[in-house]
Length: 195
Image 1: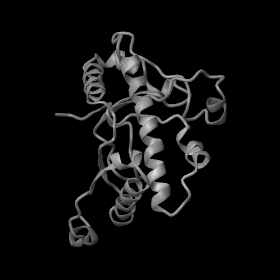
Image 2: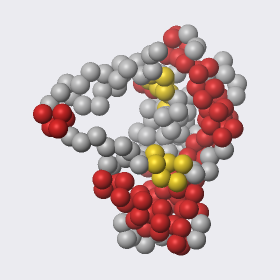
Image 3: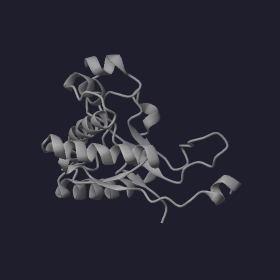
Image 4: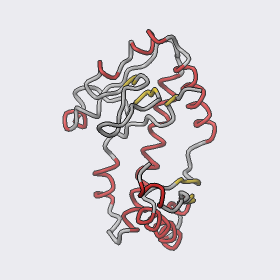
């Protein structure tokens, strides 16, 4: 541990109820202020009031558990290294966030909006957007994950609007859409760490 780390004050990540982002102007500005404080003080935050249905989140968690319980050979058949847009399975220790750091002790599955290779968004960003790989052993996996990606796209737009307001930018649909219409890649709920 470095000296800077040992002397750093403990900071708790703020929890922000973002439900006000689909309210009136006063509610949106109140949430935007909280987002600004969080982004300038800690750089990170948790959210509640996101609007994603609890039942869908529960299905994502269950499908993720089912996927990570598959035999390694079945998961590796969907390796993200076989995908032009890096969608698919990422084995444990495959990711290192900074040079010299130990690899992450997690495995993951990355999926985005399921777009064909000839879709304009794919042609504009083929390294991150494109067709997904799906496990044939789990017939509900694709529909659950695609539903989740759609919910996260709605949430992304809402958060971008709040962040735009927080930084005194005009929250124009064109500006928000140019960022959030890019197919979000969702991998966070589909991660597994050793027990």
